[in-house]
Length: 592
Image 1 (spheres, rainbow, N blue to C red):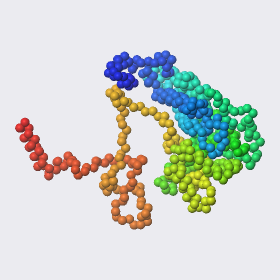
Image 2: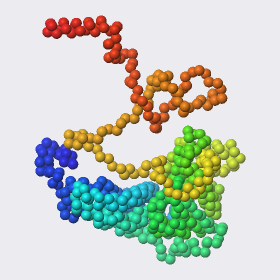
Image 3: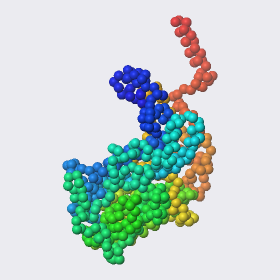
Image 4: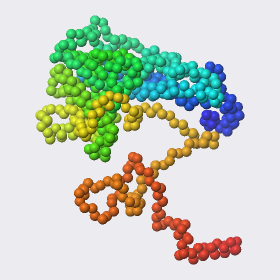
């Protein structure tokens, strides 16, 4: 730190000498940490590593959460370019719009920025829930070791005494200023309190859906339009038994955080999932009121985990499509990883049977959604297939869509394939649209055919998985790295660079080694010549894997004909030349 400060100064040498001469690291103290009085920095740094790391995690979490919520608030309830107040919903609609586009099934989103930041915040906070509960369990074990470590008398006794006051990780994290209510935590609707995890790790209140009749903004204030207008409940009253307008839709939505809240929730609200970690069972009832209103109610709503109890059917469908794309990619990736080299065999222990269950569930949900969609006559020009295409083409979560539809390069290529496939079958009808959701489900259904020969693993699919080594990295990288500047290397030795990955050898070099290397029993077999007699020729070299190369013995560097080796000079044929060079050197020395 001293090195860095001095380097930033114009008078580097003078500043450095002043800082070093007046600042002894062993005597530096500060007010804070776990001591209320002056704490020596050297003693503070000697605390058990886990507690130091957990404090840093808490500080980063509190600051990032505050920053992210501020960004969500800016995009959802901030000001536009003309400095006029905006009020958007987390599903991307302008709540001040008189046209109520959140009821218009084919209207594009007005506030994609609000939609994007609410979605990113939800994914980030789910990841933080997992980190928090893992460290919470470790904290309890580390606290129990304090008595043993304290007897060694290596660390500051005051630090240990203060650590013992915090019997749990939530109390420990709440003791630091960066996580206490203040200037950095003044948003009363999003206060950080680790003793109340359901509130601290909940979705943002700025991401709620629009009120049924919208809002009006005057100056900096925005209020719901109520008056004598009917409420959500009033609109739905008496519609439950009308099958022509009402549909019960039971769905399972991905929510990876719920498995950690088991002690705070009823078991009926969620299920553990080997494939998706945990899923939220949602029981919806949707009613078509008129051409300008089609609304849905979550019957098993729980305020602590659900952000909306009422939404429009348009929002419901778009939420389902986003969840479907995410779950589809996870399922497809799991199947791809379980399949050996694109063969129709499954690696032992893979839970591809769980993918089959997910497919069956989504097929059932999609049929229920399409049934309700047809209860409003929108005309032949506006089928649900067009709605799916329209929504996905808005580019709201392109990265998820691209990963889900691979190997197709784009949605357009996928749609061309659907049309081509329909042309070759009896499904093609004049003027009909192809069902993209159904097409994707059919693709995955073909991939899991080998699972039909596996033993029944139904019970194993309803348990949370171990840490998933195949999971994609979060969108926001929360890791930190410590890099020592070059000008400070004289004070702090830089870390040794990681060992280099062996380079893939050139084809000619590999061929030479393969002539001497015996054939491996795992070498690939040419399928074209299978069943025929082999010729007495050397086997073709096995392709070199790119992702995880096998460990091989260190090879000597190949010498080209233009290079000379030391052993060449020692050969008998080179002896006259060596003697001549020696005489020339001796003559030069004598003449000198």
